[in-house]
Image 1 (spheres, rainbow, N blue to C red):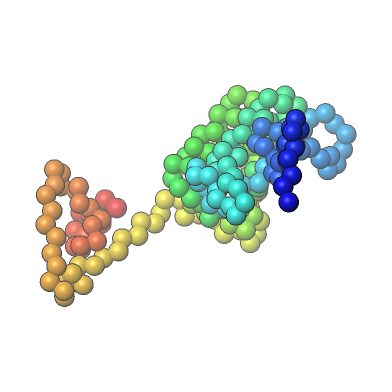
Image 2: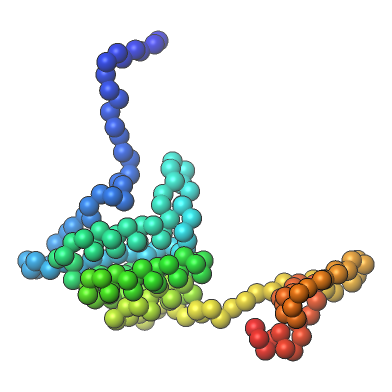
Length: 191
């Protein structure tokens, strides 16, 4: 069976809200004019779009920055509560959020409060630093900002199977952290 609609416009159906939409506002308590934005920061901090089954969503960085920009345009927003529950993510994405939060505070004068939930590690901890106040739940796991650098070592395996690596480098530390040899004492001190 064939249906033909002539002269009819297809309806626009949106399954998900756009980040350009206004913030959804709920009155939790009180009747005062000033507003507090509660902004969840959940999951891995990344600037890559999030792939879903039905559609691609903006990255966590895009979502947080767009919400901060909308709040910046609303002069009634006097404070932002970042509800952080994140294991961290990319250094660059975390640094972008860190600086965006600082810039938001400078441009608006609004207070920023962080509530750390289950996990606020690495980048989750880093993006919390610009806050005026940080409150961690007693069960929050937090910390580990820039304190881990994993290096796989395969030098012993390479020797067993007779494979070697020849390195030409332009500086003394250019091959630091290579998995094909043990680190020197000087490299361990640098790292």
